[in-house]
Image (cartoon, rainbow, N blue to C red; front, side):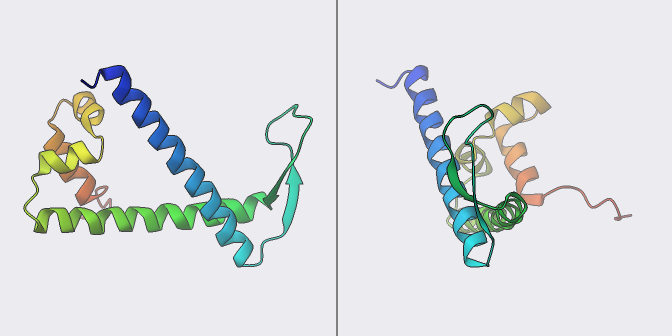
Length: 124
């Protein structure tokens, strides 16, 4: 039987894998678009250094990946709805339970809000 602790550790491992994949993708994207390579400590006070791209180039590449990932998520969300999945199932897959609890709504409400995106401040 899966315990909440097992689920949490699996979620943490999945999140760590996603962060690692995103960092590798940002590095590759920046490098492939001509970013300068540099070495830097992995954190303040470290005695070792890592090879990386120039920080602003890495930041720009990470932002492009963020936008692309959001678009990809919306494509999969649309495919899930077309396949007959419910908003509750989509919200669960997106991990929106805590958002729903915080906002006082349901997981389905949180999923629909995610799909709709932020409100347009220029809309009447």
